[in-house]
Image (cartoon, rainbow, N blue to C red):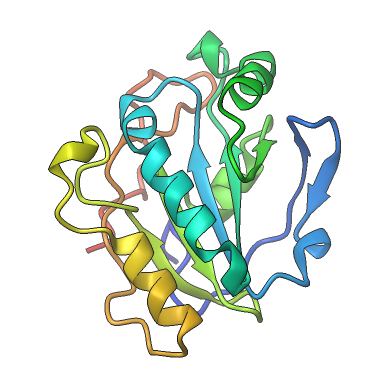
Amino acid sequence: MAFTLEIGAQAPAFNLKATDGNYYSLHNLSDIETLVVFFTCNHCPYVLGSDEVTRLAALKYADKGVRFVAINSNSPNTYPEDDFEHMVSRMQENKFPWLYLWDETQEVAKAYGALRTPHFYVFDKHRKLVYTGRGVDSPRDASKITTNDLERVLEEVTSGTPVSVNITNPIGCNVKWDGKDKHWMPADACDLV
């Protein structure tokens, strides 16, 4: 079995605390037509460099039934600035148009097979995976973006067109696993293409 969810797989369930103090589960989001789950954090330069591009996509497709959910699975023992308090302050400062959930145990990151921050997963209304990988080809420096895979996929999904490319390699920092070196990745984690 692959480390990362394979195309067609069902979205793994979760019930995580958000920066608004409430808990959200996959069931709470069942009325959403297209769900984008993405693994992110507070400090990664690839996240910081592409946050506004991700915001634009979330806003652009909101009226087409698309909703974004961000999950921080990084261990604060590896990067203290990835703790919950910093998540709350980051959301207060940036007012992102998505839920920001804390995967304190890292179980959700393992269930999805999150490789990097950011790493995007797009699910259809049946919560089947239709895309996994990068958002854009230059997340660290938005001025150098030539390909926006996330917007392409969302355009295809919301218009009823088959997804033309459903797997790309996420580009970013690796997930910071608790008790491991900050560059460690699970042995079965590998490039997707």
